[in-house]
Length: 339
Image (tube, rainbow, N blue to C red; front, top):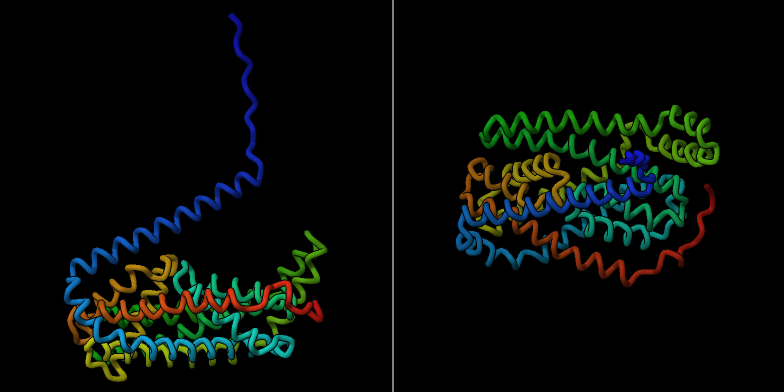
């Protein structure tokens, strides 16, 4: 009887491992989306579908105003990117810059890690005008500015929650949120401005050294706090407070300035805590359900507030898709004049 020869273990090629990782990531995102949808259905059933519909029916007529305010927020984001591009901003047609933000914000809003998706879309649309290193650098700057702006904006939101007598967990969560996000944003800015990564790339892959240096050089232009982009993004958050105030009134919540700020705080906390859940499905709605007492309203109306804002996001998805379809093709863009 012969003993079979042992088979050699085959190491899967790098491509196979990459495909497996991609499939696993896709499966994870799908699982989060399904879990969020299940949570949303459970919330609606527990709160009462009839009560929620009764609050939403008269509120739907406010959707055009909420969508118009979202357009103003997109303009603020566009201003932030314009300031982040600095001396390179003149290379990008204003309409093209605004179009990129309409597409990025509308399509990214319902994705997991929406800011990352948003910036990725904009990099692809704007790189032909300024070059990939500068467009990518601005993507990182916008990400850092978003973290800093949201962190700073959480401070007045936390004060509003405190003034309304909200539970201490909401107040302390707002404080922690502010500290963590501002520190993370500053750390991200420091990394993009550091020379260590450029030197490492020069040693390991000399052909990428020039691009890395162009990336770093542009990142240095904005300053550590990215004051211009951060201010523009904070202005956009002010309009989002107005959105929450209008949405609250629309569903029957007697919310003043403090109530609108507190609702914004709840939204910011839920968005950060469950950033990987596509569109915050089920999680943002659940946060508002828990915050009903703080907002001095019923659970049904607090849930309806979150759902009305979600309806506004959903309306913008086909609008952004239409802008993407009707706009010029990527190949029609001008070649960048520089690295």
